[in-house]
Image (cartoon, rainbow, N blue to C red; front, side, top):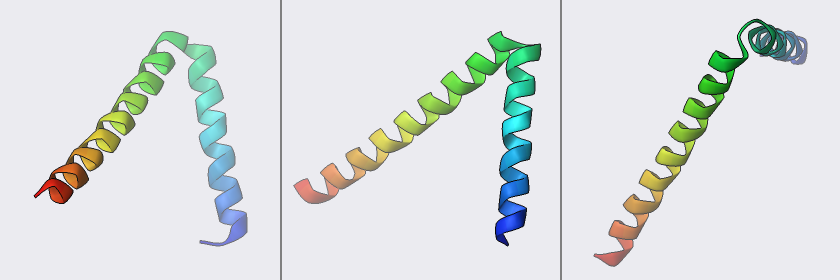
Length: 56
C-alpha cells in the first residue's frame, strides 16, 4: 500500500468517524466502548495464555 493510499484511507476513516459522532453520538460512543472492550478482553486472554504456559 502506497503512502498516498494510506493517507486517503486514513482521511476517509476520520471523516466517517466525525460524521458518525455528529449524526448519532450515542451509537458512536457505544461503538468505541465495544471496540475498547474487545481490545481489553483480547489482551487479557493473551495474558492468561502466557500465564498458563509459564506455570506448567
